[in-house]
Image 1: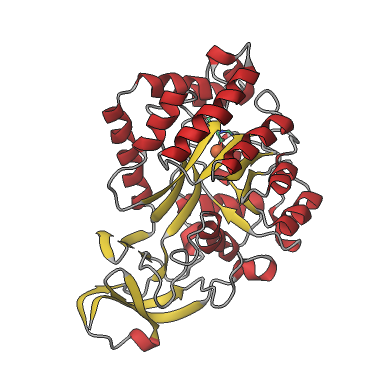
Image 2: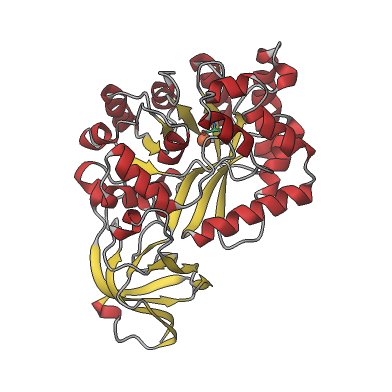
Length: 410
Ligand code: NIG
Ligand code: FE
């Protein structure tokens, strides 16, 4: 007797890893593990899958009506703790003003830093909860979330604490104190890096506020050497690195990720085939962010095909933030990964489930539908999984089950 049975699925995408302990790469990047039938859930675990589950008796039954069932999405790159919006900058960019020019004139990250520092703890938490609700609507059941708009000891810690809220969406935290040099340190940037390494990271470690650290390696932000100092300090304080790498120029972020043993290099518009090989060798997953690429209207695209051909594992995420990526929908992000980066739907789905779970070290619990794994499951009202990415701007998710609990239904 199960607690919950999802029956009548035309396609179940298990994304099953089986014995394979590594992220999926190359041909396996599209190994979505197609089957059909039912999924039986007991407590927060999956107890049967496929035809074998069809006749399970259950306390509650969800009829998928010939729809597609897949693992809850794992969004492994978000900046989910911010207040307000930057719609003014969105309009300026539409008029032709560049992201960099807006940042130079006091907009960009600096503007969000001002908004976050002015917000009360309650306002910050309310904003996070609102964001998490929207993630769940789009089928995202776990996120990685970065600080990075606090940029001082007090406000980075406040931001990380605000991410610890009771909500169905699980949050894995990253300290992105290395997002930008805040205005009060513009003339003494070395002092800011010292603050990050010697005060912020130790405090984050002491209170266990983050599992990862991150740095934005970019022209006019942090250099390769500064990024290395920050990531090395993060590592000394128990946080493995993630890197905002080669997004707007060839900053060397991917090479840095390899050098310091980061778990991911993210963005990667200017990464090369050689970077992809180095990342494969160093065990760095490429996190591609097609929403940011689209919103910034970049002609330069992350070389997804080269990465997959070179056996470098690829994850796909939203980059949800108020500047370059006001996007939380994974179905829309999958569409952009296909249209703009040339990925297949299957490759993109693997990137947004099991490969993303690997980048937050949760692959043994989430990211695939397998016996004994946590029951994070989506039901979609389409009969072919490719429709999830195909119907542009439509939300195909009808039911969301998180840890065995039905948290969204029509
Ligand atoms: O991931 N690349 C740097 N940081 C963010 C954008 C932050 C912002 O504009 O607020 C990103 O795209
Ligand atoms: Fe980002």
